[in-house]
Image (cartoon, rainbow, N blue to C red; front, side, top):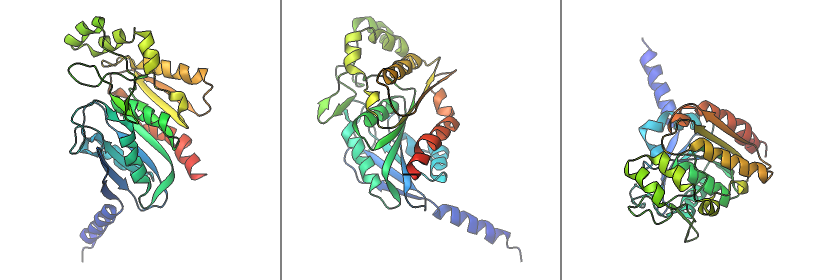
Length: 283
C-alpha cells in the first residue's frame, strides 16, 4: 500500500491548522490578525502606504507575512483607508483609530500583552513612526522609505493633514507655489524637496521620533523617486543623536528606488530578532 499520498495529506492539513486568521471588529480600520499555535506571541503590525487598502493582507505580502508567523510572531495587517468601513482617501487619518486595532489584537488569545513592533512602508512608515511617538507599548519601529515629517493629505487642494490625533490635525508641511510645477509634471521628489524649503513649517511638522520607547530601523534608497528618503532619514537620525536617544537605532542606506527597502526583509528580521524579540522574551 502506498502511504505517500496519505502522508502528504497529513502534512498539508497540519500546516493549514498551524496558523489562524481572524478579522477584528474595529471602527474605521480593517484589521486582520494572523497567529500561530504558540503562546505569548510578540505582536507585529504591518502598515501599507499610499496605495491604500490592506496591503499586508494581500497575496503580494503573503510570503513575508508567513515568515513573521513562522518565526513566532503574531501579525496584524491593518488597512486604514481604501477598505470597506474606512476613509476613502489618505486624508486626516486618525492615528488613535489605528492604535485601537493594535489594542484589540493584544487582547486576543496567544498574543503577548507586552511590547509591539510596527512595520510600515512609505506613508505607512510615517504612520508607524507616529504611533511609536504617541504610544509607549510600541517598542520597535521599522520604517521603509520613511518621511521625517507630516505632509498634506491626498486631496485636490492639499490643504489638510494626512493625520490627526485626539481629534486634531497634525501640523504639516504645506504645498507652496514653488512646488506646484513639480506636482504638475508628477515629479514628486522635486515637489517634496521644494516643500521642505519651508523650514519653519518643517520644524513644526517633524515627527517626534525621539519619543519612541524602543528600537528604530530606517531603510532608505538613494534613487527614491517619490521622496528624498536618505535626507529625511538623516534628519531623523540627527534628531535621535541630539536627544541622546537611549534605544538602538540604525539607518540603512540602499542603492535603488522607493521600493528597494521592501526587498531587504533579511535586515529587518535580523534587527527585530536582536532588538525586539529577544528583549521581549527575556522580560
